[in-house]
Length: 287
Image (cartoon, rainbow, N blue to C red; front, side, top):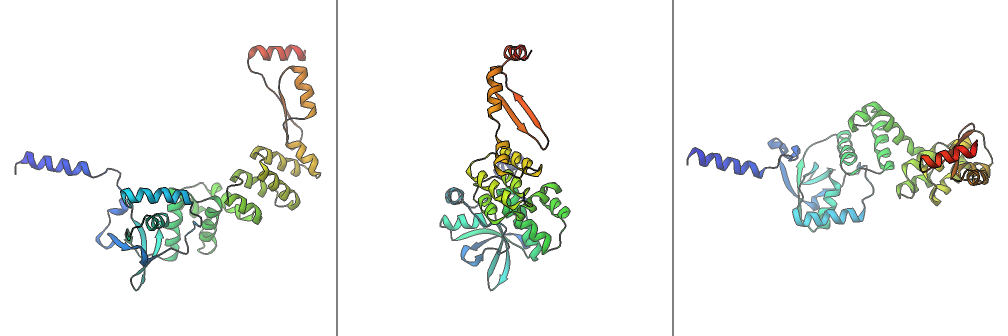
C-alpha cells in the first residue's frame, strides 16, 4: 500500500469520528463501555430527580428507537450480577420504553456521596431538575454528607447565592411546594410566597392569588405592602393593582394611561406616552 493510500485511509477514518464525542466513552480498560441487560439495573434510590415528564420520555424513546443510546449510562456493581444506576435514569427509562433489551453502560465503583454528586450534577447540567428537586439534592449533600453550600455551589458551577436561594425553597408550605412542583406557579412566585413565612395568613392568601394568575410583580408588590405594615388584606391587594380610580381620573385629564406602583414607603406614578408629540401634549396639560 502506498503512502498516499495510507494517508487517504487515515483521513477517511478521522472523518468518521465526531469531534465532540463524549469523553466518558474514552476510558481506561477497567472503565470501558459494557452492554448490560436493562433488567439487571435498578434505579439509584439517591437519584434527586423524582419526576419524569411523559412527553419528554416518549420523545427520547422514539429517538433511541431510531439512533440507539448515544451516551452510556453510569452504574456501580451491587453483587450477583446486578447494578445500581448512578447517572442516566432518563436514558434507562426511555430505553425500556423503546423496547431495548440492553444499554451501553460504564461500570464504576462509587461511594454514596459520589453517586449522589454524579446524579445531581448530571441532571442539573443536562436535563435540569425542577427547583424543589434541586433543593432536595442540595440539602442531602449539605445535611447527610456535611458539604458546605460553598462546596456544593462549586460542584454545580452555580453562584453561592443561587444555591442558598434554591435550598430555601424547602421552607415553603406544602401547598406551595406542590404548586411549584406541578408548574402552577413559577420559582419567582414561590420566592415571593417564601418572603411571607412570618405572616402565615397573608402567605396563604398570596399563594391563592398566585395560583389564580397573579404575575410575579404583583406578588412582589403584595409582599412589599404586607412588610411595610399594611395588615388589612383588602388594602394590600389594592396596592397590587396598577390601575386605581385615581389613575383613571389622572389618565383622562392627561389623555394617556397612568399607572401607580406602590413601594414600602410611598410609590411612583408612571405616565405612558407613545412619542415625543404626545409627551409635549402631556406637559402642556400639566402646565
